Length: 454
Image (cartoon, rainbow, N blue to C red; front, side, top):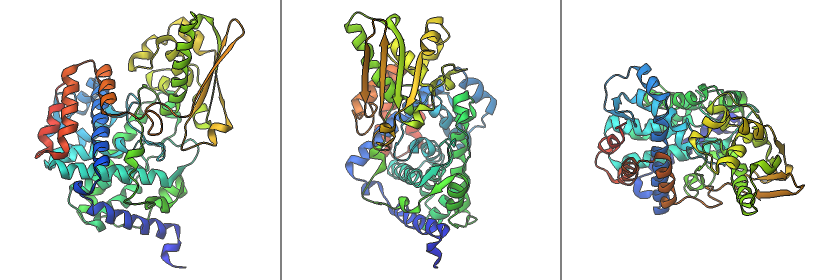
């Protein structure tokens, strides 16, 4: 048996091919449509980070870090600090409202796993725009491929494990490392996964957000180990992401390499809630319009039944201790959509009202095998409203709005969403200008500093 016939050898061989591709990719090599998609993902990522930075808990958190002076902006805070501080704090702000871009084929969030680290390092090194943009593409594609290759055990949350590879790859590119050292950085990162349990999200434990900060910092550390010549690739992903956390398929790392761009297959989020809840929210909003058209309201609803795929059906708690826990509850999301016509970041503020609690308590969530059978290409749900007059209103969606397969967001729609969320035209303009200018900028630092003001 050759070394490549072992799981560890196969993981290393596939990584070496992926590293070769990562080392040679330039911004000019990226197809125009993919370049535009990168700008769009960057626009969403920066805007959502600024939104998260405004949460009331963020200012005390930034103060608690006692940031040392540095050249790297902590977005939306008025603070510039070290690359490590900025990478961690920007990453946790990005994911704190569950509105960051995701990828259903990777089963998680490739951009959030690597973009904060890459952008922080780009500001520290003051790299040019094309170099930074190429590193961002590498970070996304590597993370997404490791996400495709990984199948976690039940209960493992995807934050902070497979995606650390993207942070490492993108940072290694910014450091000018060759293929061998990129492979070493990514392999090292794949040996540092976080085994976070999904209960953190259900219970509202904010450690779930910190996993993403740790992931970005670990990727940066892995790239530096490779730069120093300390890292030694062994194919450890076969054991860390594989044996320990679930299973690992090395072939997914190189499938259609150079032909398929996973960044084009991601989704954007219009609801401040877990992606698993979005099809239920979308179907509920349609039914809310039906009720209004017939002169009915939530007082006429005696019960709600949601049928969806099994991973989403686990989000069935009808009580929620805080905002994070609520964002991982289909009863919360459905009730918010019915009562308020949207699932906005501030929706949790009214969830303690008696009418809200009563309606949420009447939401039943069940698993539909037909929805499981369509994964990962379709993530659907059906919502039924049971009315006092005996009628049942039902609506089903195959994919949530914002998915690449269903009403994907374009630039105009993304800007409109950010304008609605941020409510500040000047801030929105800064985000739009930054995302547009960065790939061609002479100085990444100068462009990113425009997002420092609180």
